[in-house]
Length: 278
Image (cartoon, rainbow, N blue to C red; front, side, top):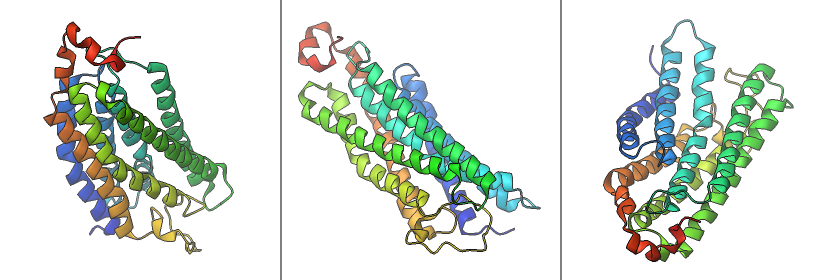
């Protein structure tokens, strides 16, 4: 069976992310779990994109149609923003580390991780409930999905605030952490577009229905709908924006010798007062 537009985009997604899946595995093995949960989440994001694309391609190839494959694929598609934002949060947190690896502001960043996790949980639960409710626009699932995406937007704004704070204190940031901060800053506009797309897509319809409905979506935001919207918008505002962020983070991880910052001698501690253990 020939793939439709969504199937072709899903196949392209697989091809795009398999190389970066391998790169992210290498990055995680390089930095480990304890010192870089941002890199772990980058790996998780790549896995989600490869798995989600595989489910959508399989859904179009399987006969008779298996709706569960569509549900799984689109659920992963809709929840992909969470690990990308949490990856950025983890990378920003790593910039606050001391030369001996001490993590500062752990409680603050844990609370922000909970915010992102809560947004993801609401999104997934909302999708599940919306699918069970069918075409009922007043279902709790629709409300949960919208609350979830709003929380994603709030998290993004907080990340921008953290980034601005780090730039204000840039003279106290360790050498290679400064370069990482530059990479994160370059990624923020792409993350902004991706977050906006999630908001517009979520509010484009009052339901999360994979099957065709008798009443087509004719709202102002219909072109942003994940299922029935314009694929060109989806390609630019979601796929390409995510890919740009992943490229930036992977290049930074491979090129920057971030471990060199941990080799700073005790005599240089006064050079980085912001990174002193407190």
